[in-house]
Length: 231
Length: 229
View 1 (cartoon, one colour):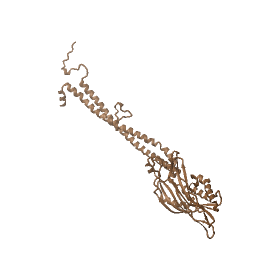
View 2 (cartoon, rainbow over the protein chains, first blue to last red):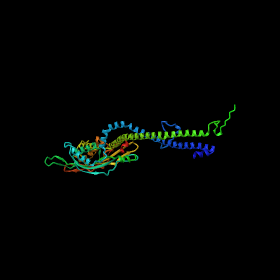
View 3 (cartoon, helix red, strand yellow):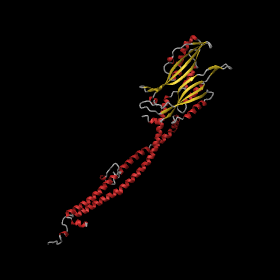
View 4 (cartoon, chains in turn purple, orange):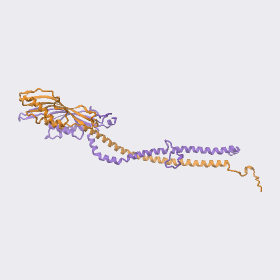
């Protein structure tokens, strides 16, 4: 029927159909190819001639190029591995020491024990000292960094310690605190000398124990405060 | 010779050129086939191939990201340590040691004076941080930590008439001592001396002079940036 209809048309009409039909088919195919070329993107291996390349932001090869760039970035980071491992290995000792000197936690119970232990560690031939009381004051708050945009990197905990002993014992005790691996400072000392008298039996001069109030300050590292410190 | 074509016009062989109809059918067909080929190559050849490459690259990226994350963790560990070390260095710069100072002070008081005949006792000693932390000495590239030493002295001398000599000797000996010059005390020992009232203690037959003194001890921090840590 269609063939008969086609025959019924005059020559010009037939020619028009014969030209229009392939053009329509080619245009449809071209449309699909155009779309696919957009999906594909710019092929770096040039499997297709460059004049048909069509690059869109979400084309496959655009995404591949982006991924390759990201890979290159990650590879550059990975290349630093050996150096960093060596560096870290060399720093292990120092890192352990730094953690001990400036821990993240205040470790109050350990500190309380240490304050007493240091007094016990002083041998009687050096001097005598006894810890009478320890009161913990955490109101010191974060330590401050100087300069512009000061933040905070550490927090202080103060141990208000009361001790008694002879002068040599007290000096040795302060020395042990100041030279301890755990970072501590003595920022306040009040010494009340003990009374003097004479021994009724030997008639020798006797010295009573001195009483000392001192603030032992410990520090805890605070990287969170440091990060928010506006540096 | 004359040739006569007796065929009807529609059956006669075309005299000149190719039929446009033939051309359009053949040309259109060839073009369509070519485009179908291109479409098939792109749609079923290049696009799936690109998808495979993309998947492989994404897989590789995920692997590299894991490896890189490990390196970044190492770097974070190193950076954290360096920051902690800087904090420690800063704290060390500000740290003032007292054990040796008190020891030197005790030795000084129990030592010999430029004028003989008197002894000195410390009745009370209070050391406290002064100035609320490091003091910025802007312009000099330095900062300092300051401590105030408050103490009460008691001089016990043999001769009432030599009270002035004892006092003069007391301050002169302190000033000349390594204790004063090496421990960072500022000014002169007698800067806060307000005078005295010697009292004769008849029980022990000695003259007693008492009074308070305030000294300032400073530690200069050469690198001002450390003072702020």
